[in-house]
Length: 400
Ligand code: GLY
Image 1 (cartoon, rainbow, N blue to C red):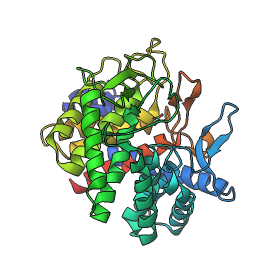
Image 2 (tube, rainbow, N blue to C red):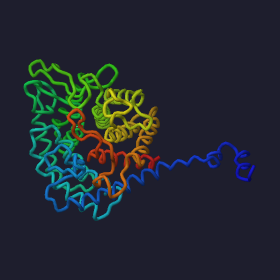
Image 3 (cartoon, protein in one colour):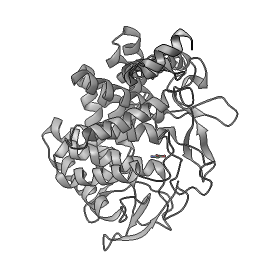
């Protein structure tokens, strides 16, 4: 027996990992810093690349492998400016601030959009984060105008914000679970204006969604369409998932995030209880892979070969971290699960090498598989929620 083997043989178990050949696990703080460093590098490359392309914002990688962009009117327009604001919060450099402001200003016309429910996603991620960090009063005007546009889509009889205007032959009044994500913007609007109307709309929307979107196992439908006379659902189905009765993964992620956020904002126990039940559904799901980056649909027929959705993992991680601060008993469990997801996303399996991946940070998200659109690609919202999750965990660890 040579000297090292002898030492290992005699060593107390605590030292064993230093003696076997398994690599020591990187600390979670180092994982977070690495994730933020790569995200910053990629976001700056992206910001410089699109700087001269007036009005353009990053979206995804197109089928031919090139960068696909959008103008302000695509539902994802706010994610890149929002990501830049988070990265600026982490590292307040003049260049990050310049680009965060520049890309945020590309969204100003969103404030007049009344044809879609996504105004909350668009303006709260971009202008909302910008206002949180700079208190720029000009941002308030844009956001309050935008909130007024968004609530034109609220129907008092139905008690919900209408999501989509297409497929009118089929859906009388479609509401998708994603719409929960627009409510934080309305809660903010009530606070800043002292007008309870926005909050009341958000509460009504959250209450009715809680009543009608969920199944007994706490998974949810993607689309619920309401009868405009009875205000009761007349159709429950999917649009981006595998089947009407399947659990489309990003929909479950939006639900978790939406109710964790509404519980935080309102202190209402019924929202917290629902968020905890959704979290349990996701964390204990037999189809959740070992690395905790879910397949695009929990009922995809080709599991374990089904495509993953890194965006859903990032949204779930961020939501679990929010939830962890609201529940003493399970807080550590939620944090540990989110940390595992962040560790996976920050591994070479999902995190791009700087300079590659069309300058997005994460690979392997799925936008709309049944529509053969955005399958196994980077997506601007995957990067946004990934950076948000990194920042949330960094703050939690810094304060503990
Ligand atoms: N809100 C659209 C999506 O999640 O794909």
